[in-house]
Length: 332
Image (cartoon, rainbow, N blue to C red; front, side):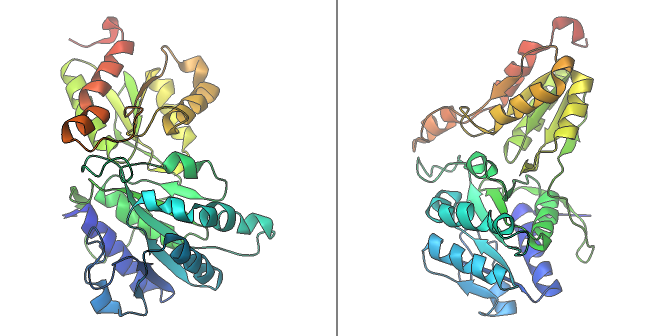
């Protein structure tokens, strides 16, 4: 194993898949000579040339349509959008075309393409550039929506996404690109399934369910809770659609208490959907109401002070856990 950044893990996954399969190519805004908005594709143009690393206009609907057409034609495009916020311009093609074609035509066409999109707040990009729309897209049958949080997972899941026969929306939090983590040595082949979460920290007293950047904050909160005698199990969903419900239920059966931590808005969000599934599948094992930690229900402020106030914090998770773990369970 070696330690690399999230950004480098993404680049390695793209390069390895392009070397493995000549049908794979990447297209997007400023990805060639400039190397992409977050420098993920840096060096790929020099290695693979303009035929397989294609700069596009600033026209999300157009380039998404081209990617869908290329996928239907037998290629395996990776489409990079500058931000998930701009994907709204392409949402009709994603929802009404890519997601439905296999179903509408009796399983005959395959639409194997990946849409990579940065998302999330914390970098002072204000209300129109700091949103998370995973809940919107996860509502749609036919789309797979994944949000890996570590270099290991992002490399393995991107490789799996490229090989998948269906559309995959691959959402990368923009504050994760410099995060470092262990990844197998170059040349060691591996993938991470698109339909499985993972226990990132075992515990017995409470389950913290989270994803994307909030995984790292949740792990910090779990360490603080452990100092106070509360052992939290931290689960990284990794995939928003499909949900690994069996993993969640198994953890709830053990801990009997749940905190869901996400950066996005609360109302009709991913966490509320998760809570409903847990109540449906594991109600008899619950000893306390599910606690839900989210961002503030406001458009993201530009002010750094206000942005920090709008984002969920480690202390919010700690307080939510302590609210439902009775004193009798706290270890001295």
